[in-house]
Length: 112
Image (cartoon, rainbow, N blue to C red; front, side):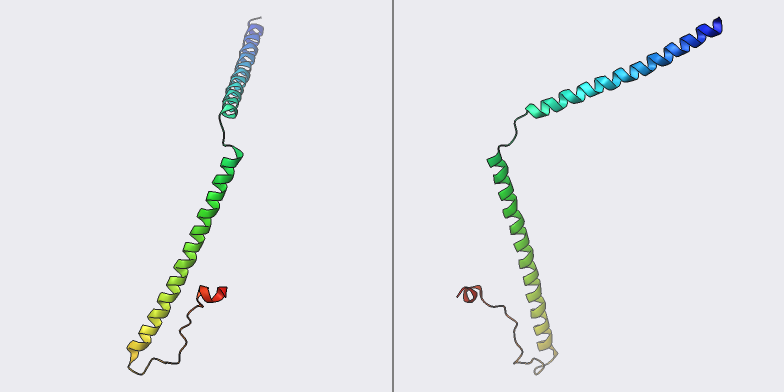
């Protein structure tokens, strides 16, 4: 009889622990649900605002890409300048005067 009471007590304890865990999980789900509902009720950007922000990002990205291209162009021209001055430094007759300067076409002449 004592063994039966002990087994019933342990079974009741295990059931209580399992139910407690389920209730705790349910409470957590309710809290998360309330938090998500609160986020949905918050004021959000309108479509025109979102579109304006997207356009601003596009301009920023374009600006950064053009700046990167300009840096590469300057670096190439500085390297070319360094090569020319290095050739001049080799001696008074070392520089080939017929050498092209590899200057890019002027943008104003391309538009014509």
